Length: 358
Ligand SMILES: Nc1ncnc2c1ncn2[C@@H]1O[C@H](COP(=O)(O)OP(=O)(O)OP(=O)(O)O)[C@@H](O)[C@H]1O
Image (cartoon, rainbow, N blue to C red; front, top):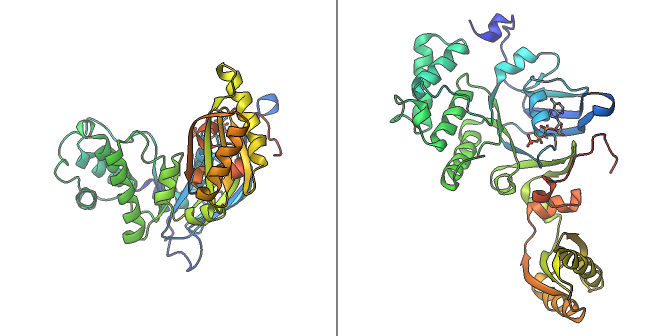
C-alpha cells in the first residue's frame, strides 16, 4: 500500500480543470521564530504557474525560495495566504498534494551503495507500486534518462550528471504532474548542466510536466524558464518571461570599472566611483546610474551612441577606468532595477531580521 493510501486518501486526482494554473500562490507569508529572533522569510508572495511549463523561482540566498517550495510541497505551513498545486489546496489536503508532486532536492537522495536500478525500484515500492510494476517503471526511467547502460552499477560510482538524472528519475517514479526541483544544476560541470537543462525542457515539452525550479543562476533561469519570478527578501520584485523582463529595460547597460581619481587605494576608488555617478547623471541619454563598490552601471538608450559621451565626461572629470563594457539588458539588470543591488552581491548582503518596508 502506498504511503498516501495508508494515510486514507484514496480519491482519484483526475485531470486539472482546463486553463487552471498548475500552481497558484496568493499572499503567502511565513515568519520563523518570534520576538527579537523573528525572521520574516515570506512577506506576501503571489504567482501562478501554467500547466506544462517550466517556472523559475529566482533569488539570492535567503530570498525565500526554499521556504516557498517547502510550503508548496507540504513540508511547511504558511502563516497566511493560500496555495494550490495541481488544483489541490496544500493546507487542506496535503496528502493528496504529495501524490500529485515529485520533489528533487538539492542534496542527492539515492543510496550510493545501491545500483541505479535498485534505487528506482525501491522508490517505486515506497510509492506503492507492485514488484513487477516497480521494475518496469525503473527500466522505463533508466531508458528515458539514458542511464540503462550504467543501471546495474552502484549509483555512488556514477558521474555527478548521471547521479542528478537519477534523482530526477526518482522524483518521477509515481508519475507526478508537477515536479519541484531545488537548484537542479548546482555542483554540475558545464556539460552536465547543459544536459540537465535539455532534460528539464524535454520533460515539460514532451511529457506535459509542470516544473518549478529554484535557482540562483541567472543564466539558468534565462535559458530554461518559460516564466519566472524574482524574489528578494520574501517579496516578488519582478515577474514575467525572461524576454518580457529584459524588454522592460529598453536600451543598453554601460558598466565601468573605476580605477581611481588620483587617490591611491580602495577608499580613493570608491570616492571616484561616487564622483562618476554624478558625472554620468549629467550626461544626456544616461539614466539609472548605480554604484556598487568600484563598479558604476548606467542605462543608456543606445550604447554605441552614448559611449563616446560617457568616456569624455569621465575623462574631463579625471576619473580613470580599468574597463568599460556595453551590453544588452540581462536578468541581472532587471534584478538591479527592482532590488537596488546586483544579484551576485545580494548573496552577501545581510537580510534584515525583521520585515522592512522598502
Ligand atoms: N528553519 C528556519 N529557522 C529560522 N530561519 C529560517 C529557517 N529557514 C529559513 N530561515 C530564514 O528565512 C529566510 C529565507 O530562507 P530560505 O531558505 O527560504 O531562502 P532561499 O531563497 O531558499 O535561500 P537559499 O538559496 O540559501 O536556500 C532566510 O533569512 C533564512 O535564514
